[in-house]
Image (tube, rainbow, N blue to C red; front, top):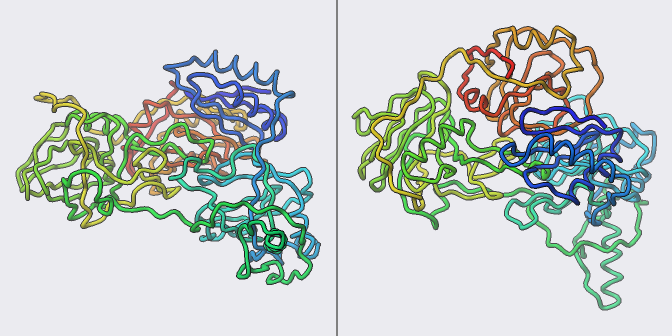
Length: 552
């Protein structure tokens, strides 16, 4: 085992193979350490994320090494979950042709083996399943689909999996399930957790089991006379008919609906009516830390310091939800007298045409219009309203995750923003020190876990070049234009845990910094990691701005 650095707040434990990953993850999970926030198993690694204020890196490393000594004796198996499936996928016949077997055999083999959840990633609740009884390595599609429906069951490499929600994807689709794979409102939001054992149950088997149960006077479970033998629809008249007990949970919608802040009228008092939302405005708090093992990113405000300051200046808890406004341009009318504070990027703020200061609590009288102009420096503006914005929560946070589609919808014209109860009185502040976000940022970085995948000159090039923020910059990540960083290893990196601040290098050689909505696993090597403090400053970088990476 190798212990590799992943920034200031994580260690990447690399082991020999997936079996060792499952054993190590089981040993770590059975003996939790205070201060460790996340365990993220992947193809050959376990990412251990920790809070340096509660536990030191040295203690975390010792804990991992102790778990590794116990791992061979650990029970790496979890509960058995049965997933009903209709073998009706768009790629079923072509995948069978690719493997040189009949469709019936592909279905029989897929449903006839027991799978294990190796890790989750790509999207919340998306489980990468492996099986010792699965002999095939299935190539991904040459051109990924722009839309894969929720519930699609697919194959890629040696993995199988099911899409919890509609997303793009390049897996070969062989079937469909109606199971709710991810429900952010449930006590257990993810159906397929790491180490769980999984069996896919074909519709015909479910119907046979239901009929047998009904004949003996028992419950029929799911299925019934309207259930479709989808394997025969796919040209497979000889699909397996072995009776397997069906799960008894009710069928669920194939996507999780979200509601706008305006629709959540039962909570909080009306404060502001949005007239113009600006370029892109979302509700954000401090996010969902500690849920990466479920495939759920941290999300939350990208410039956490700006949100914290805005909240404190209107008497809120610093983690209360506010608005994150990209590039400015928001106009809102006060429904009632509302204290607000604007922080972040450099903008002009006025109330009914009267200029007011940023980084200062101001009262918006009933009926008055609050206008936030376009950002003149920096990218993201934060608006805190006294009491905090009340909006639908998902997994304990009101943050909008743009990659996963979690949290309240982006703010739209006509939305009524409601507020809750403030935490304290408004502080007496004459001025609050702040600075204009610069167009040349110096960003501190530490060495990444895959620095040895790069040529000797790559690290000096990363730190010596002046990089330009490209137009490909959003809440998921920032791509930079500049010199290509040369790799010495060109093979594919098995997926491994990622963190906000990870600097990935795709095959084109230009660095990409993952931000708060970035995926929790990824397959590009990480050459370096942005320090946690520098992430707030990087959140204000706009296309065309220049960045220099410096050693922490």
